[in-house]
Amino acid sequence: MSDDPSLEIRSEARFRLAGLNMLAGRYSEAAVLLRSILDEIPDAQRVRLELAQVLDLMGDEAGARRALREAQAGGLPPEVARIVDHYSAALRAQRPIGASFDIALAPDSNINRATRSDSLGTIFGDFTLNEDARERSGVGLAIRAQAFARFPMNDQVNLFSRVSGSADLYREKDFNDLALAATLGPELRIGADRFSVEAGGLWRWFGGAPYSSAVTLNLNYFHPLGREAQIRGAASVLFNSNHFNALQDGITYSVSLGYERALSSRAGIGVTVSVDRQSSRDPAYSTWAGIAMLSAYREAGPITLIATASFGRVRADERLALFPERRSDRLYRASLGATFRNFRIGTFAPFIRGTLERNTSTVEIFDYRRTRMELGVSRAF
Image (cartoon, rainbow, N blue to C red; front, side, top):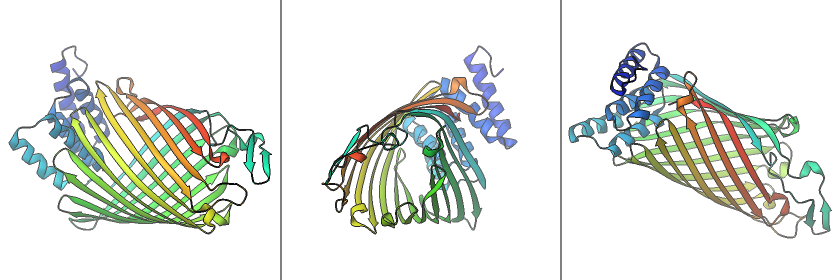
């Protein structure tokens, strides 16, 4: 009946089957069924509220909150809206453990973010760059994964542990880029607000060799703004150790503020602004950086479209001894992606994403262009 030609019959069958999956603890299968109903009936607010509950049970509090914002933006009766307000304030990401994973084939015009110039201007004149220092294209495998564990301490506090990793792997192993982060700390609920403090480590390998490591301290804050919007703030301190160049050792301070709003039950926007200060052993590697990003998504039946655009600046304190000017960069990046749930396999759906990147710099070695495509699979809800 879940594939019946009648929209009303198959939607009712999927909704009831989703309920049975929830009772059996098969939350991913329930989420896929509920999402398939919304793909065909985007204004089915009861279904969207059920999806929010499933996502909360899976430990995906951010996804649950987005579903609730979409339901509120789509319009709810006043008495239902009040119930949803109470439920939103009580969200607590109930699943004790969870994980997410996506993998993609990634053709890239510039896997090493290097200049396409064959020479480099210095205070001693122009140096000729060999092929390893210039733009290199390749087809890689992009892997992103995250796992978490949550240990309730009381009604207001959880102890939260998270491990996340990323890998860009190429046939030429010298360009493999891997990163791993692990954090542990308390999550606090104060009314509708959420705070978390996380301490941990960050490790990166490039070309199969350790590249850098850092001790990290992160502070995160969430606050709802009415029924359809929210803000997120974050601050972090990283104590960096660069294994290739000790002059880049130092401390990095970061702050960011993000605003998200549901425009309707099928669309939303977000704006994020961040500022970084990298204080290195050598002032020439010390920088101020800022970036502003605008994002938007739109549900078009079983397809989710996501677009982002960002602009950033980087400026060094002093010039590197080899170059005539100190570093000053402008970074432009735009991406457009789509997830196709009508072609899903189990709880996974294919996606495609294209990214254009341009970094202009007063130091030629940091001046580059990049075009990247990703074709892979991610979760279907």
